[in-house]
Length: 469
Ligand code: BES
Ligand code: MN
Ligand code: MN
Image 1 (cartoon, rainbow, N blue to C red):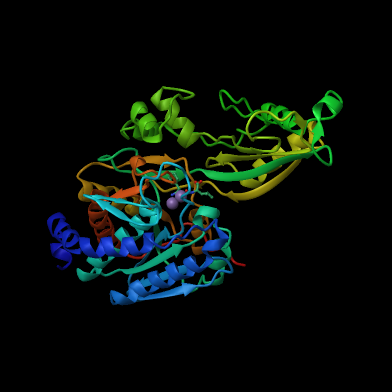
Image 2: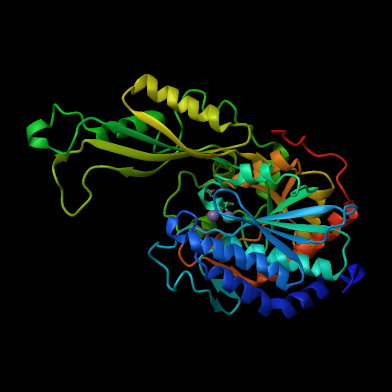
């Protein structure tokens, strides 16, 4: 196969020929439990990184492991001609824990059921990583004049704590003309979409302690302060639980609203409220209006309560007044908002009205605004139509990928998205899966995009100047 003959048919033949190899690599990666949140998985992280690095050599390319101080990063190289454009493909090889009830098979054994690959990490994000890898092999076999790099992070699911340092430390080696991220989701099967923005995330914990130990509520109740009840009051002052509206002064001030053109794309995205409910197992929603719903998940910031710690949760009721309580919360932020500023607004609000409550910031990720015009954005659009026979629209992601803003800041290269996951694949859910339609089509998607990148050449100017230390 050479560049002139990289047709949809020849790429499908390539994918079909390589299917067994794809399944083998994916299985081997899925069966290493790379749960970044679990300190007990440390050895598995390194075993996976070594496996992935060695994979590049097995296919005739080069790979190395970059130390980060935290979990390793795998860096793969296909071609190093200084005159050619360089495209870096980002994926993550760490996964979420898989102890939710509802798994029908062992999450760390990959089962193949016809065209469906099931197991933790199949869609988020090992499957898309191997898909991009095979798309790159197709491009290399066609002798496309382009250098390809693979950046496989292993701390994405814990907020990428070591990523920025690692990028700065290895900046010289990581120089690239553009970055492609394959870790996002379409609205529905058959309707490709690519995000024009990602939400950021700001996580925090409220705590209140008012006594040394549990107390009998018959003895102290009425006089003793109850930290659980008080934190419920605090949360209710911060937000309306029913509508989701945040009551912190200034919270919405920096929100950049989606423009009319963007909303038109959203309306063409194939979003369907009933399908959304079914895909996520939702029984009832805050709105059933499709555009309002899309605005809520893609274009508006949120505040959510994720967990409450404290008091008695065993069988029956124990009438104690607890000494201490904790509420775990987060806000998803949209482009225009800043994690520090948002945290400061929340901290100041709580300090003013509830001075005994401690607010502690946990990890935060900046929101991201993507590029919707220019030759590479057009290349994304064409590659989706070529590979999947349907037009692609710009949506946004409600989720967050910490590495994205960091790569644009530190590497000074624009970031585009070639996502392949579907809502029905079940990100973070039991029975997570990926499928051959997305993988085989995905290989053609990447190969075609690389063909465009080779043609477009080296970008004349970086989007933003690289940050100097
Ligand atoms: N692939 C997701 C990001 C994503 C989520 C994209 C939803 C599109 C739609 C990523 O692996 C992820 O889960 N991110 C986490 C980061 C957090 C755990 C720090 C998120 O968004 O919660
Ligand atoms: Mn992911
Ligand atoms: Mn994830």
